[in-house]
Amino acid sequence: MENLGRTCFVVICAVIGVSGQFKCPQRTGYFPHPVQCDLYYQCSKGEHEVKLCPDGLVFDDSDPNHERCDIPANVDCADRTALQPPKPSKGCPRANGYYRHDDPRACDKFFNCVDGVAHELPCPPGLVYDDVASTCAWPETSKRKCENSKRDALDDGFSCPEGDIQGPDGRKLPHPTFAHPDDCQKFYICRNGVQPQKGSCANGTVYNEDTFTCEDPANVPGCENYFGQKKN
Image (cartoon, rainbow, N blue to C red; front, side, top):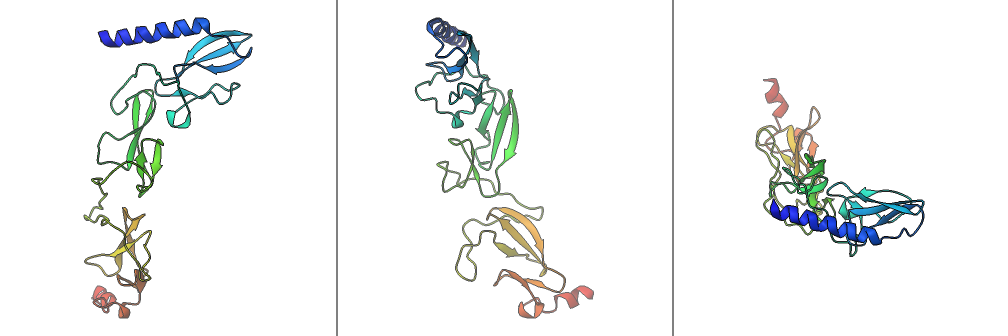
């Protein structure tokens, strides 16, 4: 606590020192602090007031006519690298912003922190949370390594297999399907190759794992008498 107090005192003193030297570039507007990215000035009639963004956000100085604090991924702070001391809480390194999940295997989830409260959010199927961009991205475009990511499983234990699945024409299937082990009419869909869902063929047809489509039972070995067996 003593070190934190000393840090806060140094920051405050630095702000006061620079603030005393600050001259409004225009009579009205919002202007960045030269050192601290989450600190800025509001000028009115040539007089300035020091203002501070909420913890985790930084001042966007792209338009002096608008007062705006945003996440660091959306703002170029350049040499303004100093920030206020963080106010961490469970799941939130700072009080506001987007942060990776505290479970290192949950690459497809992240926290949206608002006033120190962490809200868990999922990425769309197949995407992972990218720390640099503060958004979800395809694994191949993100620098984050997630080899040990958890895979969702359905209530019957099915989860999407690793690796790409090729269709009959040799092309990668974006949403591959898989046969149900015990029911010819049912199958599984893997959205974006990772998100499992249950599927079922229309009445009178069964799933053909060779063509990845629903077909007449006569064309699917082992399922020829499927509907006759169901009636019995």
